[in-house]
Image (cartoon, rainbow, N blue to C red; front, top):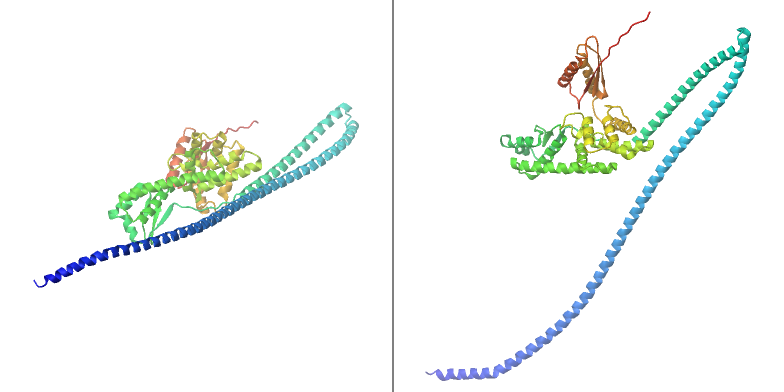
Amino acid sequence: MPYLPYVIAAVVALIAGLAIGFPVGVSYRKKVAESTIGSAELQAKKIIADSMNQAKTDAAAAKKEVLIEAKEEMLKAKNEFEQEIRERRNELTRQERRAQSKEETLDRKTDALEKKEEILAGKIQENEAASHELEGLKTQAREALQRISGMTAEQAREKLIEDMVEEVKHEQARKMVELEQDFKDEADEKARNIVALAIQRCAADHVAEITVSSVALPSEEMKGRIIGREGRNIRTIETLTGVDLIIDDTPEAITVSSFDPIRREVARIALEKLISDGRIHPTRIEEMVEKAKREVEVAVKKAGDQATFETGIHGLPGELVKLLGRLKYRTSYGQNVLRHSIEVSLLSGIIADELGVDSVLAKRAGLLHDIGKALTAEQEGSHVQLGVETARKYKEGKEVIHAIEAHHGDVEPQTITAVIVQAADAISAARPGARRENLENYIKRLTKLEEIAKSFEGVEKSFAIQAGREIRIMVKPEIISDDRMPLIAHDIVKKIESELEYPGQIKVNIIRESRSVDYAK
């Protein structure tokens, strides 16, 4: 083993190196560690200093932000205060204008009264002069009678008194006629002024509405999806909504047809949801129809609340408010019934204010006068009858019920409120563009109604009144007896129903008059 001495020498040298190098390494690492600790302390102090500086900077920024927010709040509060001041100024301006208008009206009335007083004073003077003249004539007549007729003074006095009484009666009657005519002219002028003022102060927009709705489609391919396999989808929609879907050559559109506007609206909303969703099958259709019904119910309630808010009528029962909201989807000759009811309410309030009566009661009666039209599609009877029943059901006042009953002349108006509502209803319906019906068709319908009545034996005359809502028939008493009158009325009703198209219902009123005339010779 020639290498063993070398190996041993190497091992010995390695051990000696380790014995010398270990303390040296330990000392070196200790120095490095102390240097690292010193550097870490310096770095920690630097971090702390930087943190304090950053904290000061953040605090300054936060303070600045707080000051900015405070300034913004102050500016917002200032703007709100200025807005409130402007609104109050506008309200004061409106009140001043109204007070000025009333003052001018009072001035005009005062001037008219003064003129009347002057006229009456002149009439009194004329009467006094006439009296003096009559005294002179009386004296002359007395003398003439005594001279010519040989009457005694007492007889002449009685004759003269009779002549004077007749003359005074004649003059009194003439004056009464003149005064009555003056009062009528003045009343007509005042009525025209009130109506003109009401029309000017209540300007409303009118939108003509029809019995169909159109739903836009994204593409022609959607028509086939709506129809579905073997027509399942379209049958489901029509069955659930009660409408007719018209799918024709009109590009990218489907027509929804129904005389019930609420059903039509439900179908329209459901179709739009189905088209937007893209999943069209019977189950999905049922879900969308139910959602559409809920949305329409919410819209109905919202419309009713908005109507009460606009008119300032509060305290109506919730169900009555919902019935008002249903009028949003009801039209009469193209005029939206809810907007018409709101306008009648506002017009009634204005007219009542001018006449010095309860404007709140008049507005309430005007708002509810067509409430029966919300039920005409569900119940039998005219909208007047249904409106009266509904008002009684919800404990409305007697004057409101009477105004509803009398607004179409079914009964004679007995209160000033009923007359006001009747006038406001006529004003609203008579606005240019408010209602739509071809004049020629309207005349043809009335003429046809009278011709149907005249086609029966024993009918002498017939008159279509109340815009075709009633027909009065005069029959010959020698041909038509009292017992036959119900029968002929029933026959006329059946013929009208089969041959004539008309809105609402038509009242058939048959009149038979018997007269006996003789002469004393």
